Image (cartoon, rainbow, N blue to C red):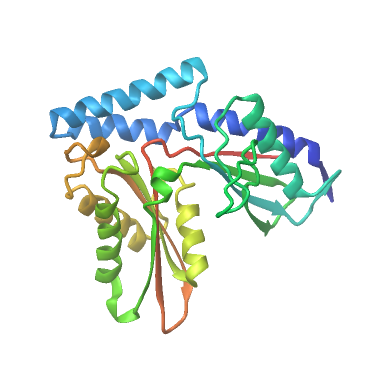
Length: 280
């Protein structure tokens, strides 16, 4: 049994909060540059240039890429041979978020209740998904999720008879309805299968996968490519000003489901799809 101190998790999370908000992931930056070369609209080209410039300035100055530093979302895989001592995992993560957002001067965007809406002043509590895995390591993935894009996400409980065409149609319609709200070019996470809540979780996890890492199943890898092509035919373009780059990536995750169901969730993210992973 390997012992991991809760304080070590807190320290790691605090550093992740600042790093993810100030440094654009390589997969995202590379995709923005690649799509810039093929963008047909002069205005779209200008917007993509400004997006990359903004990210480079943020990294150089270690300032947030976007003023919306998001709600803190974590996917944590805990090895069954690891023992966390010195506190609860959830408490350790929330203390890390509290420190990271306060000491890093990141915007605190979380309210304690959906209706009373009093700001917690430290961006806690975080949304934490925990999984037990083999081994003695703790893998922490952090994604600060802005709500300009989160608000444009959607869920559909399709009938199995609607099949692949129904899924494609729903995803594309959701991306189209998003318009300029998610600060395109967007990254689209798609979860298919399971139950209502499982599909939504899969869509969230899909956004934590690098967009240059295709689904290992050729069927779903092809679906990712098909969806990306269809979304880029919408003409929304960078920042919603028109063009051929409405999305730079589509990631699809699938899970078993019931014979009577075909749940599909679409979680939309902005061009600054931020995520970072560490292994303790």
